[in-house]
Structures are given as C-alpha cells and as structure tokens.
Image (cartoon, rainbow, N blue to C red; front, side):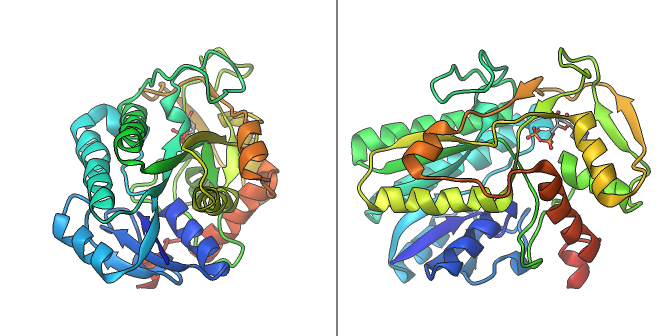
Length: 330
Ligand code: UDP
C-alpha cells in the first residue's frame, strides 16, 4: 500500500516524505510546484498537478494502491491571507473538498491533515490545549479550521478518519543536508533572520514591539521540522491501527519572542544581524505556545530536537550550503 502526500514537495511535506521513505513506505506525491520544489522530493513518485484538477486525482488514485493520505497542499502565509482571502478559500478549502470527494470515491478512508496553531487565534490559555476555543485572527487560520470541520463531516457521513496536526512554528532542516526551507518569497522568521546573517538582506524587520509580552515582540513555539515529520508517521500508524479521528497540537511547549530568536541566531551564526522595528503585521496573535501532552500520550510523539539553538543551527547549516535555495542548483 502507498501513502499519498499532497504538497509533498513543500517544506514540511518533503521532510515527511523523507521520514516515510526512511522506514520503507511507498510514497506518492502530488504537488502543483507553486511553492514546492521537485528536488525536495527524495524517494517518492511525484505527480505535478493540482488537487482542484479531477483528472490528476483520478490518475493518482487509479495508478497507485493508496491506503492513506497526508494532506499538506495549501497556501500558508498569514500576511498574504489577509490581502487575498479568496486565494486561500479556493486553494485550501475547495482543494480539500476535491480531495475528500475523490478519497471517498476511491474508498480511501484515512487522512492526516496539516493544520495550524492559527486555528486558535488569540489564545484563552497558554499553553494552548486542543479543547480551547478556535477563533482565528487571520484568513489562513480560518481556512484551516474550515478544512478540519469539513473532515469531521466526511468522517460522520463517509467514515473517513482524520488526524489533524496543529503545528506551531516549524523551523530547521533535515540532518542529511539534502532538504530544508526555501519559500519564494520568504516570509518566515527563522529563514529571514538567517538570510540577514548571510548578508542577503540588510536587516531583519521586527513586526511590532508593542505587544503585551515581556519584550513587546510576538512569542512563538518553535519545533524542528523533522520532529513534525515524525508525528505524521505516527499519525498514519494510528489510523492504520483503527483509531478514531483526533486533533493534536505539535509544539515544544516553550515560547520565544522574535527578539529572542534573533539573539539566538546571532549566537549560532556569530553574525551581527541588524534589526529594525516596524509596524505590526496584520493577523498576528501575540503569543502561540502549545500544550502537546495529548500528542505525546496518544501518538507516542517525543520531539527529539527541542533546543531552539539546535533547531536554528540545523537551518543555518542548510542556508549556508544552499544560499540561493533549491533553484540555485537547477
Ligand atoms: N516576524 C517578524 N519579521 C519577519 C517575519 C516574521 O517580526 O520578517 C514575526 C511575525 O510577525 C510573527 C513571528 O515572527 O510574530 C513568526 O512569524 P512567521 O511568519 O515565521 O510564522 P507564523 O507565526 O506567522 O506562522
């Protein structure tokens, strides 16, 4: 049996493909390569196409013996989603609808879903528990929540079981050095800080220092991308074992402010990394920190690379070796 990974050429998708291939799974990837990179798919069979294209999904499900899907394919930028919500509803929500309908048609009844802490919005408790309220502050989080809810009703009606993994902030790169983070344009804090360290940017812009946090900058919970990948493998196992649908947070349970991330990056890189304060970015909650005890207890998840310094060091190794990202090697 094969696992279909949608968005498997993207950052977290490609690390999950690598983890599945490492344990001998047969992997099929579908990716429209809008954000993904062909070179990032190490070991899987890649179909270049979009979930909203019924013909592509028919081909993928007919040509392969798929028993489970891991669904990453989506747009995922908070700032962009505030400017282009329609793009997010179309690709994320409608794309997921197309996928679930095809899964039902081809009798594939297991899906692991790439969700996000952005489903919570401004948290009522810190750390955030899975039962806390979900009131997204941005269109991206709203679409991910809509996708989760859609899965719930496809479970009720059609018995498609899901595990939704709500990630906090992914960072770092694969220990092989073969894959890492490369978005165009890059908007995420850790790679941008490292681009500034490499001199590819004149400085890092800090989006707001007037939040209600100790140093005024936003606090996030950073988790190594390979630890996230491991959780997907465990979630597939859990569904194959016949478990019911569930939602899990994935984070380290420890928050770091934007200024703290920059400080740690200065230490790791031994570079200056100039910083300037800019206005807040629309849609950003002040603090997002996970309680992941449910994933630890029920999935048996045990993140191994949990020091932020080590996470940033692994990203730094990738960025130094690939200063232009994947495309520079084409
Ligand atoms: N951030 C920043 N400058 C940047 C990019 C991000 O100050 O150039 C901040 C952003 O406002 C947020 C945090 O860093 O508070 C993490 O942002 P990122 O986009 O990496 O992840 P998100 O939390 O939005 O998923």
